Length: 252
Length: 252
DNA sequence: AGGCATTCTTGACACATATCAACGCATTGC
DNA sequence: GCAATGCGTTGATATGTGTCAAGAATGCCT
Image (tube, rainbow over all chains, first blue to last red; front, top):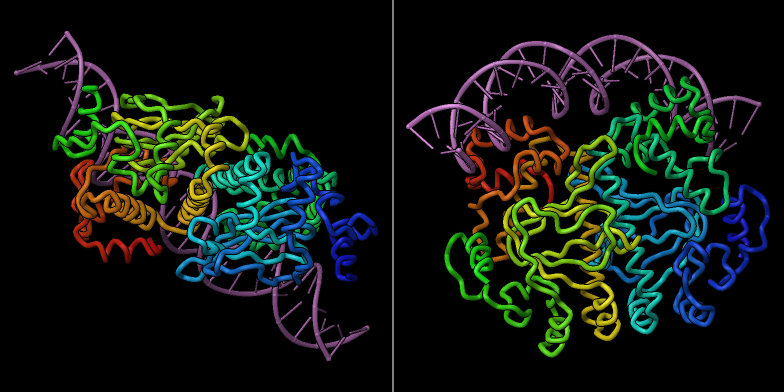
């Protein structure tokens, strides 16, 4: 149980928070942005019954690996994870970062096999949602079915945004867009939209944005020089959000 | 009705084919790769009842536009479509090509609004599947629910493959991968895996693969010189499929 | 606290693809 | 049959990002 305190510390920025001792969806502070969204409290209870908790991951630990049998999707409770595929020549393509309240693993449904790997970027806790149970529950709960369709659809649109970013945007635009995305997701969790700690390394950012570490580093330096960002290693402060939005050149 | 004959001509390479006069899933020659896959014939009938047909599109006609209200997903019956988003500065990112038997429009579910536009690359016929009906039917038919989850998941994995392609692969690798993808999809429909006509322009290929027209053209020329492909405008013959596979450097 | 390994930054240079430009070829309509 | 138009090809040059290399900062382990 103490491990959960540590995780909440991580997530909350070292402020102790009793909410994180919860072990059910009903009083999870993420339930308004997570899977229970749009469910009645009776239904939340039913969803809660199928969810398996207590799967804390250490930094760098795998949640699942490309090729593993697909059994469950996962909701992030605390910490951050990255999903990625490894190319034939061993390079890593990060396909997404997952923050608390977000769902990952849906790419495994199509072939009953995980199409990507997922790894914790820092100590992280996840809720495991066995897919067969979720399917049964969805058939009985129209709202849940709809919401899960929506979540998958959102994953599609986000992937398409990334496709566009990789295909059409410069290094600066890509980095700016990522900063805005993280900012918006922080805001959704009532954290600061302008000041945060990046959970991922420069290498991960590069592997996500299709850039080398060096380019990522140079972009941060330039944006710092332009007084758009204050960059102190992983600590980021957005000084000129309109400037960043303008630079990103994407509706985000 | 005559319009359907024309479309079947297009699809069948100008061989008349009575199968294309069908108007229901039960005897559609695509039903083994399309939505009815894995359904009992009674269930196929129920699915068939919600499907709206007779929406033939002329070349360049829009099926839906980014921002339109989302009502339905669509199955391609004949012809080919492209899905794309337009960036703020007016450039076009093609997010996918859709061949007969394939489903498009699923990116609209998340916000009840189409996140991309879809346009016919040639005369095309689609089956319209109203999403609200599909939801109801899915709740009652576990196989359909599962299959639709799988279709969405496949869209996710395909987008992730494209992300990797754009991020990590050279121009030649990208073009080779697209040729293999089209080849495989032709084979799935019992058409030639080595000789086909590209339904899309060089511009579309470029906008899909994140390349300029000139680069696409040069790559085709190089592959022709290496005797991997015979390229005659849109007519493609794969002369050395192992060579192309080797060049693509992706498991496809 | 010190030392080692990892991550990050910065610089010089190389290279793949974009850009700009010209031209050829096919299709369409008159 | 011929002009007009759009699409595709090819060449010359420009440029953004990758590559290689070195050094600085950070964090981890003893």
